[in-house]
Length: 302
Image 1 (cartoon, rainbow, N blue to C red):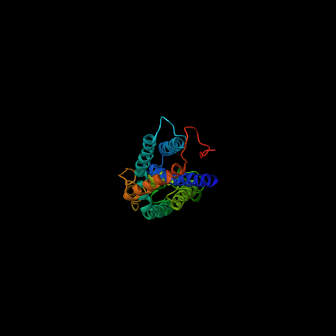
Image 2: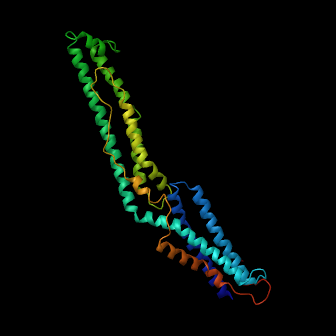
Image 3: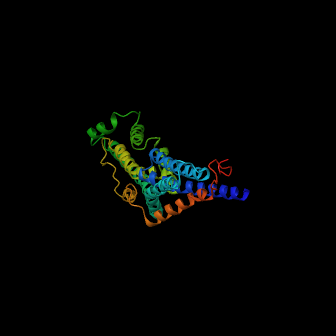
């Protein structure tokens, strides 16, 4: 009897472990489908687990106690519910298997976005520095030729703060620098790169990755627009145009589009679901039948 109990306990533990692994894979498939939202996937996965365990408990107790109202046919009915739950869950299971197949492609594209973001920062910094150099040179030129072109000098320099042209030019350059390269700019750039690098290091098993994938393309585009907005300020005397960056061509949306729509389960997913179903029935098969119409002392749940 103790040997039977030991076998049952092992079967129950093994079945529960397989159920949790299978459920988590299906959960991840739902998270990718929902693009990072975990509320609905959590509810659906919890429902799946409760249905499977609930049906298994009913089947096992019925077998052990020989409930008059639930015979073999009733036990088979609850077994079919478990099977149906596994087959349905094979759909999100398939979804995550597709993600696993493309994980190298996903990581490569995130790395490309990271490289593009780094280059974006460099490109804007170069753009801003060139503008500052050109503007300062234009101011010095206006200062040198103020006797020849007093109107230009008056328009560009004379009204600026400072006791000398040198101070006025420095203040004007500093003012433009504050517009193009705010003090917080470097910190913001570093945080952006840290976020992208952290995303590139994430495993596809990380539930944060799907939501980050949704954000990456939009974020890099927003950063470009942010730099463009800063560059819209053009001082008198500048011969400058707004910042542009056209080197970023994200393919992440094309990659993510395949898992945001659920498809019919693959052969591998169906095979896993049937195997999982068979393993889940181990506690049922290990449950001893009652030879009487009363509750058996050999029940597994003690």
